Length: 149
Image (cartoon, rainbow, N blue to C red; front, side, top):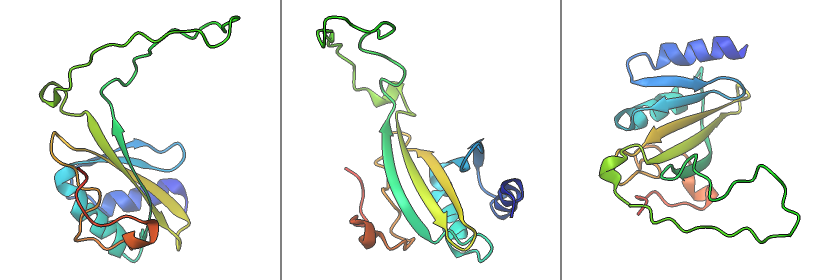
């Protein structure tokens, strides 16, 4: 099935949930509301046409200093590794940055030879590494079903 048709199928199956397609250049990347994550994953896993039955990876990202550089690297240095980093004290105040932490879930459908990524922000809550109500065989990748602390 062509990628465009496959994305349309996913959109049909998930039409009642809050999500958006962020990128479809390579593997589709969907931004999912944290409150809908469990239901969306259940559909992606159990729907026979989609069959995303394998959890490949889970990744957490801290966006606190996203886009900020410690030093300018426009020119190559001729004197070795002598560039110093100026330490900046960054306030660790999540109230001012509600979309600071994101969790990425990469899922694979072997039957469709398709991979997708779900991204959700934690909204200053303790994020679920993976909801215990969805069994993706997490023991195989060395994780336990628990909250990320």
